Amino acid sequence: MFRPAVALLLTSLAPAAAAQDQVAPPRLIVAIAVDQFSADLFSEYRASYSGGLKRLTQGVVFPHGYQSHAATETCPGHSTILTGSRPSRTGIIANTWFDLSAKRDDKAIYCAEDESQPGSSSDNYVASPVHLRVPTLGDRMKAANPATRVVAVAGKDRAAIMMGGRTADQVWWLDGPRGFTSYKGVAHPPLVARINDAFVQRLAAPSPAMELPPQCAARDFAVNVGAGKTVGTGRFARAAGDFRAFRASPELDAMTLVLAAAAIESMGLGKQAQTDLIAIGLSATDMIGHTYGTEGTESCIQIDRLDRELGAFFDRLDALQIDYVVMLTADHGGRDLPERHRLNAMPMQERVDIALTPKALSAAVAQRTGIVGLTPIRGDGPQGDLYFDTGLSAAQRARVEAEALRLLRAHPQVHAVFTKAQIAATPMPSGPPENWSLIEEARAGFDPRRSGDLLLLLKPQVTPIVDPGAGYVATHGSPWDFDRRVPILFWRKQLRGFKQPMSVETVDIMPSLAALIGLSVPRDDIDGRCLDLVAGAGDSCGGR
Image (cartoon, rainbow, N blue to C red; front, side):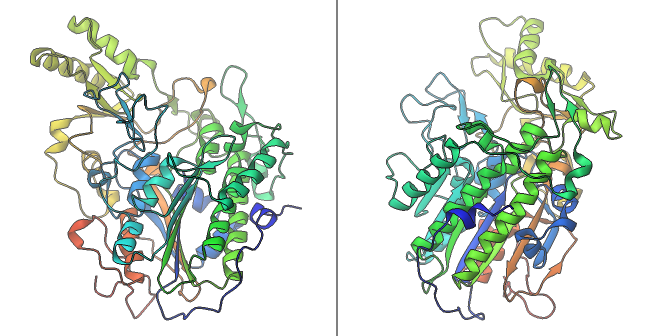
């Protein structure tokens, strides 16, 4: 019999309090981001929800939310959720960008690092919110009332940091087999030490195969992804001490929710006069999607466990008699691996040609332009931003751009290539995000100081992973709607539920939550708009 980890591992840390006045603003905002929880995944399993996700579907449901920018990656997506701003304003244009003027050998810059720290690299860094240029909801709440408590907990550092902001009281993420950590120099309080002890004990024990829910039976068939590797029939059996398997399993979200619930109890969040906020980044859906794809038993079991763990988490909050509002969304969507798509009526699905990787493209351009001693083009993968070497002369740069455009635009897997000048000249888009052009999507995520010299966009049937045997089998990051569309859900005990099928954006979340607590946010400071969460007469936005 499955029992949620929240119920198994969490002990009461604070006495219950009296019920809060339901007319007043909520005393606690619970903002949840489920990494890679696409609108397609949300809808696919909706009929089988019986726990926390079912509760949320009884609230206010926007099934067609949009991470409206083109670079649908973890860091940009999380940066939009609690800032109300698109990546063009937050400055978080990608998980990794390049700064060729950086005073270190590694010119790649990780979105949640402080590259000024000595000896750092994009793989070995000091985590920091320094690159986030705008305040989060928590930052604004603390500026309005310093008594506000803001906590962020996540499976990934970039999720916790981008939602927690610069002034959060506590920011925790899972950082290897020793458990949760925070910024450099932050000591682990007794609560986190206890959770980490529980985590270490859990990791040290093997984990048996998980049961297959009935709704997953039809997905139980093996898919060959080359080199003797198959996916699609996994049950998450794990050997003792296997942290990599732990991260790519429902166990990751369960442990994150244990820490989140314990933090709420021990800190008394939602028990004071002011409204507090906890941001929770649940990363397992993304890790599983990358490792196994989105349509096998692995993803199906994950959504079932996520539903049940969230149910136990909400039940815990109910027992504390906290007046809380929940918002749940995703940082981006995702797509399944092409090998399974080809088995399921989509023979046109394919993997990217190695010639489109930055290394191969740069070598081809160097050969055709006669440039030696320099790496003409750099990039983080076979889609997204490409950067020209700053050591190129003006004439060399012109030749590199012309040759790169010629090669890319002639390639059958390339849908579009935009230059930096083209994107910069494009007005910021408005109106329904599903109607934006590709260059408008690119503009929503463009920063002149961080974006590349070219933006490469692949055709929708192309998965930007060359060799699935070397690691991940599926991914996201494209400008297409399967990566952009995410659910946006709001729930509060006294909130009358409704479904709004028209499109909204994730940047609309922050002003909508701010309005619920009477927090004024200047309209010109953000890109989003307040969503009226009151069904029928009444307006939760109060004219904002």
